[in-house]
Image (cartoon, rainbow, N blue to C red; front, side, top):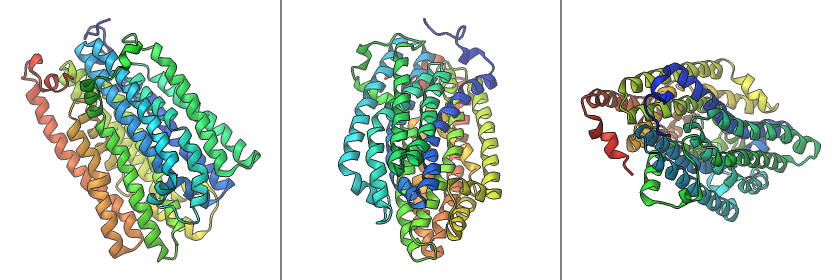
Length: 470
């Protein structure tokens, strides 16, 4: 069926209702993904102790790298699907999804092989200390087995949402999370398997999500999937990857930040009253809790993405602007609420991950109050990056995504501890948030001016139409 403005909800339904319809399931799906590791940490914290939690923190970047490649391909495939639907090119839609599935399968197998072969040196890069390494190896080898399953299901879920079925994507992720939550205490407390039990529970949940997501390949609404779509096409692969680069950079930047901060926290922490393991463990918990906020922000933005992409492709520019404004407003409300929790009730959050002694609690509270001091600015930056990705501006989206984590945070994390000691690593957070917000604001101001110019360009001559012909 050819999609036109007459039968597409992206062009006709109220924008607020559309954002809720697509964002809520997306938020739930991403929250579920974030909760995989948080649930592990909660049960490990009570069943093993803070060294077990510290071990999962040095393994966590491996799963983030896998997620980065999954979103590079999955979000790119979703953006490509939305843009081609807006242009009514259903053959390209099918090939884009098929190429994305083939690419993420190859990437998942490669991640599995690399992780199993080089786990020990990888853990060293991510800051494993002698005390944390045995736990990290036990946890990491099992987690590696689940990487292909979680990568394929994550990529498929992005495209399932863009196909107009966010509830199915939500169910897929929710099934895995529920299974993981049920099995974690069974393996940790009943079978006394420690961190290995938590890893097995996680992998089983990921396999369940994979099976459900794979079933959807035969149920796409907008086209009929067949094996011919899996044949890789260089131009289509390039378009998919370019459209997903913002999501990739956002995730891979987290990995770089964790590698840098873990090593800096270990080095400067060793010379402080906290030691090396407490700062690594506390910061890991803070980053994972913060990932809950980021997941909601990304979910709101990703829920708006198909609306933005379709209407920009169809040149309904007034709806593009309104969608962007509503997404920003929703994201900022969430970020401000998160700030209040982080500043006013940090100890309540810390206590979820086990009962520890004073120095651990003290540093964890400092992490929340300092590192996340300007987290409300993340709302604007996150939506801005997804907006640029959705309208076919992958390079600008990449720069916005790269700015906070790499351009600003890493240098600040290296420089500030020279003067402030281990707490200097924490102050790199608000410094990076502030500078990245200014850069994002400048990019979006330029894009809003360009939207006004686009209104005067005939549909067949639009820059977007020329930039996504692949």
